[in-house]
Structures are given as C-alpha cells and as structure tokens.
Length: 171
Image 1 (cartoon, helix red, strand yellow):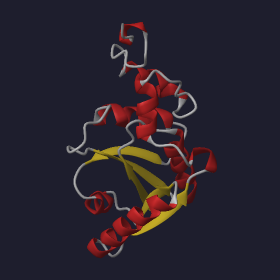
Image 2 (cartoon, one colour):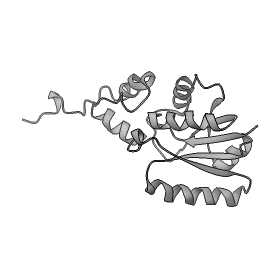
Image 3 (cartoon, helix red, strand yellow):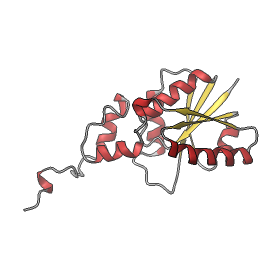
Image 4 (cartoon, one colour):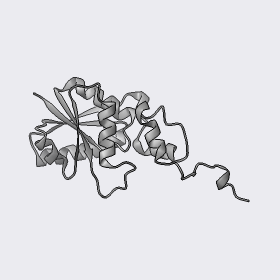
C-alpha cells in the first residue's frame, strides 16, 4: 500500500489545499493530511479546530486521514509509514523553498520521496494568509475556502470591526 503525507498548517484550509488533497488521494492508496502544530506561529485556529475542519471537508474521500503533528516532517512520515510527501506549488518562488526542504528531508530519510503538484490555475494566487487578511477586513471569502468553514473563519474576526465601519471613522 502506497501512503503519502500532505503536511501544512491549513490555517484555514483553502480550496487550493482541498484541490491538492483530492488530486493526491487519486494517486495514492492512503493520504495522511498532517496538520502542523507550530508553536512559533500564532494561528487563527487551534490544531484541534483545523483537524476537525479538514475532517469535515474531506469526509467524501475514503482514503484520506487527518492527523496533527509537531516536530520534523520526516519523523511524522516514518510514523505514518509514508513513502511520499506531497507538496503543492503555486509559483516558482514556492519551488525554490520546497526543493530545498525536499532535499533536506531526503538526506535525513533517504527512502522518503517528495512529489510536487502544481495548483489548479484557479487557485494559484490563494494562500491561507490571504484568506485571513480578507476575512480580517470583512471581505467575502466564499471563493477561497470550502463553504462549510466560511462562517467559522469570519467568526474569528467578529468584534474586531477593523474593516472600516462607522466606529473607525475619524472626526
């Protein structure tokens, strides 16, 4: 059985992430989506929230499993018995960083390969940070994230009123 790991922070999961997940799931027998618990970042959603959202939006994929992890990706991949890491590429700038990471992972774990999937052109501009920025200012994020999580993202910004309402007008 060929198992792959698709790691990321998924804060929040975007339609671009979901596209890579669905396409990867067609290539491998089992896909483990690894939600990174990165203590150096200040995430919008807790790891548990991100795992639950991913479980919800991937429930139609029988060979996809969602797990959280911290530490090194290669250690997580070994624990999952994965032979492959899946990474999505939006632009050439992603490739330079991802190539460096895949080569480092290969040194640490010679049996672990990385495959790169280019994003669908429809999502080439999309990132979780863009979604957070648009949501922060009260914009419509329905074209960026799965419908099931739109309200959850927007709820994180309720009360901030930082999107130019009357309360922010200066006299």
